[in-house]
Length: 207
Image (cartoon, rainbow, N blue to C red; front, side, top):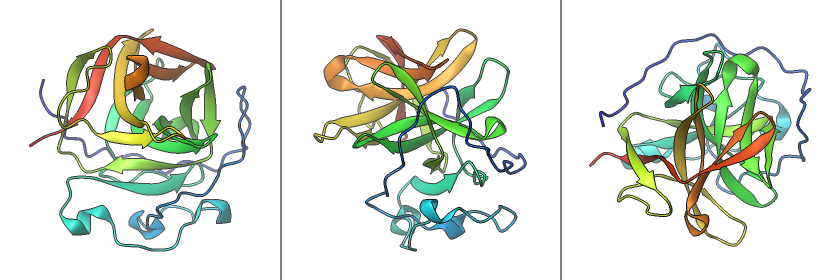
């Protein structure tokens, strides 16, 4: 499958009223801070609870990708990786967020001022999250818990099991979610629920 190479242009998100049909717990701090000044100056400043001290980005170590802190009050960088489209055509980007001790791959929908993770059978809305940047990736067909070589780790469970980034076409939407190897499936957040799939695509770093 051909690699994705996106350089999307869209306006920054408007401030959110934090309303959601889905429940949400308070957002804990990231253990490995990323610089907020990676975002372009046109974006509004992040709220205090989403800010992180400045550190070197992974790109300065010649890595092919890095994660950037943002929130529903900001936007996404021009190098953010597009993962799919929502049922109404809104663009979905690859992200991740903490929830209940897990660092979970997320679908980020700037047009809706929200990111969602799949957890405990529910679609959980998050205000603060990270987006995946740079573009040397491809999507590889995957079945069950067979993780392809070079798969991009998007997070981990509270007990340390790696979670990978996946996506699937479901109900007229290409939706990003978490690949949970020990469960042998992909979970996506969708319509306030957590949906599981045993055939999907996994995000892989191109060699």
